[in-house]
Image 1 (tube, protein in one colour):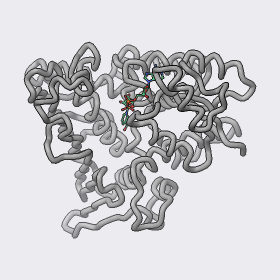
Image 2: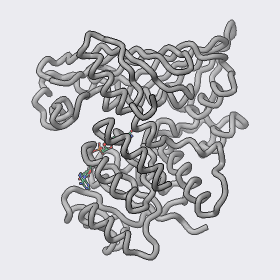
Image 3: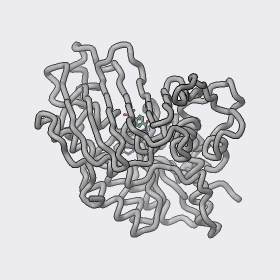
Length: 385
Ligand SMILES: NC(=O)c1ccc[n+]([C@@H]2O[C@H](COP(=O)([O-])OP(=O)(O)OC[C@H]3O[C@@H](n4cnc5c(N)ncnc54)[C@H](O)[C@@H]3O)[C@@H](O)[C@H]2O)c1
């Protein structure tokens, strides 16, 4: 089959996440980079797009121009990635879904729960894919962890402990640094800072691995740098619909922590631990047994892990390859649709618009609970209650 055509909005030169998307979308040969509106500065976006190999007429200066241009082509893009700043995600995602395109949107999918519900409805009514880039769920051993939990290797899950705590906003001298200050300004960041930026990744991982959804939560939020209006640290307790108890710590002032995403799952007959900074090992301890180290790339782990590993065991695979597994899932879904067949179940794991919506409901619940002395709040979006 010919390569699928892929387009990107945002991710211009010097952006944080643009290179990871371009590496990962192109890695397995499923997608050809065909169109882009890469920068908020039209000329810079056009120039960079052409330098990356886009044709002149598909290196657009603006996403609306790209939408119009692609709608008018015989062979438009099959998938568009939205990797612009947060406040623009809803408008761009909505416009491309309405025009009949499949979308992979960066997190957070929207800024409000209402917008999230609108996107979920729109994805349903158009039948188009709206995926959200919770890219860490693409790691091979995270998928294996999910498979182990699903086949009850650790029994019923009692407790999960998730962390996404870094120390990159810990310097009080940075309080007025414009590159950091906006993140703690409600007018630009919304109702939450650390939790909305990092905590939602950890919370998505919890649901992805356990197959359960958060029902209620209680949050203790704090601005350790007092001039910040939004939190730079949060501890969140939650309860899930399968009975699992959850704890989540997210922080931006944890000096010495770099990325800091870890997940521990404790069941009745075993425990699992995985950390993003050491993603090629999964630690498994059976009840009354010794800890075992499961290596990425071992043969016959699970179908979900086997199809998401590329490099020989012992050689590290990292974040862009995890993102590539999300793109491989999307390629499989789009190809299955074109070929009129069902999607390979082991590949049907990309995060959905419903995950993006649940995150947004959790963000608002954390903000509300944090302001109400840690009151327990219903964390489900109204449409899923
Ligand atoms: N999934 C992840 O792990 C992960 C990691 C980092 C960032 N992100 C998300 O990715 C998004 C981008 O983050 P970043 O750190 O790369 O930001 P950034 O500020 O480094 O880059 C943003 C890019 O988007 C471009 N842009 C801005 N407005 C635009 C518009 N209207 N049209 C076209 N291009 C536009 C800018 O010119 C720039 O090139 C954010 O939503 C962020 O939350 C996700």
